[in-house]
Length: 505
Image (cartoon, rainbow, N blue to C red; front, side, top):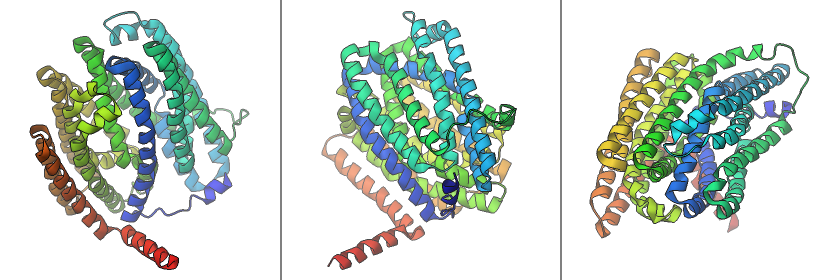
């Protein structure tokens, strides 16, 4: 543990270089995960088709709902507590609190498992309009406990800034998933979905435990009153839990509505499109929780510093995500058949509109973390609840009016409304001020992305590809120019390459 404490005295300055560096590191890990996941998704789509993908989505959504409803937000709130304790470098307090986290994780896991067993029949009736799936949910109940234990150990690693271990877990998890999915789905088809989900959960839990216990060995004999010492952590996590319940509940309502109205194929198409765009967004946003959130927490009482940090994070996120959005909008007709099958092409327009909503997410997300960094759980809960409610309503209406494309418009409208609400709320509540640089980037990149989406949905043939290439080049040049002005990383990279070239000569 002392080695870990010594290695936490690394660069923590809130510069553009720092934001770019760690966004690149975590984005790189996410990119590798995506490449491995592409094979897994392709195999799943070929073996099970849209209906099988829809069945997986319903089981996963329901299990996640139960897990988030019973884990008391420990997987998130514990990160803040552990990070603060590591700043004090008090080894005894750190060791004690790790025992607290593990005790609470085990308790909530067993509670969630029991609840999943007891309400299995109710879950079956809510999620499916056909057949009795009570046994399936009872067999999935151990997965709820595994998710709780995994969440607790992951929180310990995040709070201790063990980024290498977290990266290793992510990479090995998708690799293990690939080797489990291929034989089981090949031989058993849809009948293998429940065993695959349980085996994946078990593998990830064991892998996470191995990494965490190696750094922080398990201590069964601990202090008395260990559960009571975690009440502050639990209270902070309750708001996160309630927000997660509403978020999972909204997903549950949407997927159940689609299943009852149009069947599993519609659920599979929507889930595939939604998860693909969220995975793609992780290339830029994956650094938020691991790097940005702890830094924001450390300056949450200093308005000038947290304003500066928020603005820089938004600027970098906008500059990185905008060219990626334009590229994705035009590349989807080729990417979807390669990643899945031609059966998934009807979801392309929905995904284009959803990609456009990531521009607004790049503005919202850095500000929303401030509520948690300040411990203002009510503010976070209010923002999340409002978004989940009007998103679910708009999606149901959008699908009723225009099918999958209507859902894309609904997701875009939800992101826009959320942006207006978050910006206004954060300014009134915490005095967050977006500076002119943010607005300048937003005003330039948003029209380019909107025009790209409009062109992609209305024209075809060679003009489609020429327009896509030009718009992508325009967005990329704008981002590159601004980042080059604000960051020294480019100059450092050029200097290093030049020096190596001359040295090699």
